[in-house]
Length: 466
Image (cartoon, helix red, strand yellow):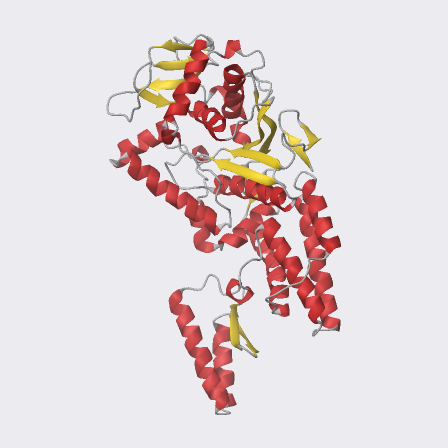
């Protein structure tokens, strides 16, 4: 497998630290607000990576953290009057529920900053002992001058306005680039004990400390892959890498992977621009699997331009896969077609080349329909198609739902009850050979944009998007 390493700015052959084990750490959300499409994209991207690696036979240990103490959370406490625990619990649950709707698998380990204070304090203590950190009035700071490789990851110029926007100004700091490892507590703020005084961890230190606690090896590199959004490359990942080098003498990760930005109709998504598209709003209109498939369709390193026209086109593409699944009406398969599996995996092994992988899936769907047209009763063919679709579900996280339920999504409970009532009424009319009433009910359902199909198991229906 080959992946693009953000640290070297080139595609490299993936060779894990240990032969059959892959350690992955992905930066999770700061839980003070609802998840947006940027969170969704990063989660889907690294869920895909994890699925591909597992399908290739690797054992994967996947860690995603939750930042549950931060300036933004404290500000939310002041605005809402709610406790830290109330805010964090509420938004963590919402985040996880929304990721589940996107078919994103839970991480193997999901550490929280507030549950890792001991590891964070120990990490900072080591930096102080090595004189790579210093204490001033408002906290403990990392001395970036002590890391000769600082900025080697991001290759950034620190005096750019875009970079300085996230660097705190403090006249006591030795260098403007230096960043907080521990912030001394202010009045009425959440605080935790440390040898230097009560306070709370800085943003960057928590990830390095949790990687060391849950994943670190004793090799040159602590983990195989560190992932996150492109917006985290500087300063967050740069600072993580620097403090880990100084604390342990190791490189934090062998490979760094970053997904591109999300744009709304061509404009980078950010709250300052007022165009932050919350995932909860998208899920009110579009099914989670549809959103997942849409987010998958663009290569992870490219910027993603979210617009409804492309989303609808993407849904039609997913519909074709489900229509094939419905057409075979198969509940058991045989062995997945070896050539098909190899072609899909070969594409994904090339830095997650999703465009190529999906084109191979599209080709399989078209070819399968053509074969079914010739022989709709070919059982061995249906079993192979079922196995192919099951493989797609395993590696891409799509097409795993019941094919009939998929086409019934987006219909509220009251409407479903009406549809079921009309279908039952139609069945009784047909039994009485009252075809006039039966046809009238079909027409009524058609006007509701509902199409029906009579099968040996009964009448099934689906929402008509046209």
